[in-house]
Structures are given as C-alpha cells and as structure tokens.
Length: 261
Length: 322
Image (tube, rainbow over all chains, first blue to last red; front, side):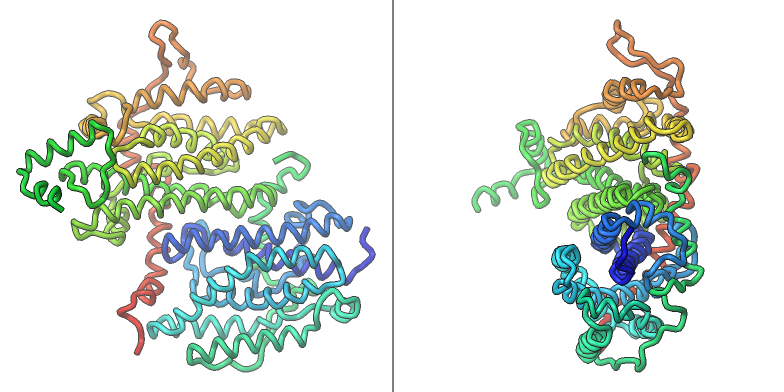
C-alpha cells in the first residue's frame, strides 16, 4: 500500500485527465470534420491513452491495484480528473444522433495541451524519478498535439464569422471551468514541498502568458477571471457526464473483471 | 518529347492497342498516362468503393473503441480503426486523381455515398452488438479483406497497387489483433465462448457474401471479367472465397467453434469447398442500402458531415475574413 498520499493523488490526476479526455476523443472517431482530421485526432487520442497507461502503471507499482481495474472499476468519486475533461462532446451519444461541437473539442484540447506541456516540463524536474522519466517521454509526443490544436485554434479564430462565434462560445465555456484543470487539489502543498511538481500559481501564470500571446495573435482578448463552476474534480467532485463515461468504457470489462479479455 | 508527340498522333484504336500491350507486358499505368475511358471508370468505381468502405468500415468497430475491455485492448483497437480511416484517406486520394479530369472531387464521393449511388461493402451494413463482433470483424473480415486485396497487389494501375501494399501490410496486424481477441474469448469463460460463437453465427453469411456472387446470373460479372482483362484484379469471386475457406475454416474448427453451415466440407475429388450458398437477393438488398444497419451507419456519417459543415467552410480559403 502506498503511504505517500500526495504522490498518489498527483498520479491519479495525471492519469485520469489523460484517460478521460482520450475517451472523449475516441468518441469522435469517424465523426471528425474531415477524414484527415479523423486520422490525426485518433493518433493524438492514442498517445493520450498511452500516457494515461504510463501513470496508471506507476500507481500499480505503488500498490494501488491493477492498472485495468484502476481505470475501469473505480467509483466516479475516486476519479481525480478535472470536470472540464469529462464533459460530453455535445448533444447525443457517439452512437446515436451525435451533435458534437468541434469548437469545444478544439478549445478544450488546446487549453489542456498547453497546460499539459507546462505540467510535464515541471515534472521533468520532479524529485520522483518515475515521473521525470514519464514526463520526458510524454513531452516528445505532446509537442505535436500542441502544434495540432494551436493550428486549429488560430485557423478557426481567424476565418468565418460563424467559426469565430462558435469558438468564442467554446472559449467562454472552457474558461469558466479551466481552473479545475489548473488546480492541484487538496494535497497541493505537500506535492510542492516534496518537490514533485511546481506550484499552482507558477503554472497558472505560465498558462495565462501563453494564452495571452495566442489570443493577441488572433486579435482576441482573454475573457477575464478563470473559473471552476461545476466542481473540483481533484477532490472527487464530478458531474453526471463522468458516470456516463465510466459506464460506457467499462461496459465489457465489468461483466467479468476476473476473466482474460 | 518526340515520342510523346508521335503518341498524340496515334488514332484512338492505336492508343488502345498500345495501352493493352503495356498491360500485357506487365507495365504499370500511372495517373497522367493515356487510358481508355472504361479503364478509368472501372478504377473509379472499384477504388472509391474500396475507399469509402474503409471509412464506413470504421463505424461498426468504432462502436467498440471506447468499450474495449482493457487499457491494452483500448489502445490496440484505437490504432486499428485509425489505420482503417488512414486506408480510406489513401484510397480516396487515388480515386480523386482519377476523377479530376472528369471535374469531380471528394465532395462528389461523399454526396454519392449519401445518395446511395456509391455503395460500400456488405459487411459494414451489419450490426455489431457485442465485443465478440469486434473480434470477428478484425479477425475474419480483415482476413477476407487481405485475401481479396492481395490479388490486386500487382494491379496494373500503379497508384492502387502501391496503396494496397501498404494497406495489406497493416491489415496483417489487424488480423493478428483480431486473432488475439478471439483467442482470449475462446480460451475464456463459457460466457465468453458463447459471445464468440454468437458473433460467428451472425457474421458467417456476411463473410460469404463479402467476395461477391459466383454465378453470372447473380453478378455483374462483366465488371469482373473486364477487370481481369485489364489486370486490375487476378481472380474471380469464387476463387477468393475458396481461398478464404482454405485458410480459415480449419482455424475456426480448431478453436472448437461451429460454423453455422452443416454442409460445409472440403470435397477432395473436386478439390473445392462445398458450402451453402447465401441468399444473393439478400446481398443485393444489403448493398443497395437496405441492410440491418445501413440506414443508421449512413445517418451517422451524414450527421457528422452536416454538423461540421461550418468547419469545412471555415477552412475554405475563399471564406477567410478580411
């Protein structure tokens, strides 16, 4: 059993963020705006799912349980991902009447990728070696994700009026929840004092600086105060969308977790 | 230069003869080369159908991507379905080059899909209600695809042959991925074996249909004959189906599964598999868009096409804001 609560909590937030967002991304498969994007987005989701596997594996080594069980069988309140990342892609489901919002996909992934880069750069200096190793590997792939989403973000912000209108709505929506991604949660102090990760304030400042630059390039302004209106996922607060996500992704596994699949 | 000029001076008949000589000599035809109109039309029909089938084929498996029963399986099936989309993209690019002189592009391909003019493979009209189906699709549908695509690896049309080389290499991994899912289920609990057997029962007829009808009464075999003459393909539908049986029937039996056709057996005298023919009228119904899941799959494609119209418009350089 792991004794270091701060470390375990940090690992859960890293693993769950990638796992849940990759899951939402996988729901887009076959539904992206064009075929080339379907291929590219799917590749990014595989990478993210792969990153989640790395972090779940560290948890497994720490004695938290099997990676498959951690990802497929935990109760929603034990998930530590940010609420923004669990939100549905839009109306309908991935199987029926999917009215998915591409602007939301672009903004959510872009905001998240910028933060993930800052977070991984900090973890590269972590006092905990398995984190340092993982972060270095993640950063190589992440660089492409970031380029991808930044290209989409800038392109859609500088094209038609409709695109701009949809993007602005998505930005506002993500901005109101982004603090849930940026926060380290109740164990922040210990995570920082043990040298696992940089402070929330430092990472938030870097994120805002990056955003300010991007927004300026597309002739837009930052929306104002960041928010976290739907709950703090880092302390197990979630919305109904997570229940739906978890019951879908564990549908087959939970029929018999003891069986080989 | 002089050679090109003299080629231009040839009559249509002479050009056609020159073309057939190239085909017979095993040369590859490239997009800018002269080709008879029916060769171009055959290729467009074949390759756009193949490409769009890859894309529509992602949909039944996609249903199982988020639900795959472990982290490892999730990663594997994500990669697999992504490959299929990639194949679709690759093939549509080949088809687009062929369509360009006719003033057509991808928009036409999509519109033809929605209108039902462009058909996709019968197998992707079927329902995939369980994880067992995900295994059967990857193992046997991809296995069937490898067999039918391998005979075109030496296709006379260069870009198609090259695309198929890459596709077949990846399909081998898919079939292995499928086999691995199948093995886990076959060696698993009684419920898992049942899941697998049910899926096989559901897919068997569709797999037979995959290669197309054998008799002339049931098929537009003029296409097949012409494609063989033009060395676009090498074998008939029935030859391919027999290859499929030879490769897979023993494997299916060795897993202890039952093929839902009591009559199937290898006839030593004829050197052929004898089997229960599927209902080819049903096949026609399926590929003309009246299969069990045809409407839903097309609807899904259409919804995403329509709800993303604003994105495509935004990417069009002419719509760029001042």
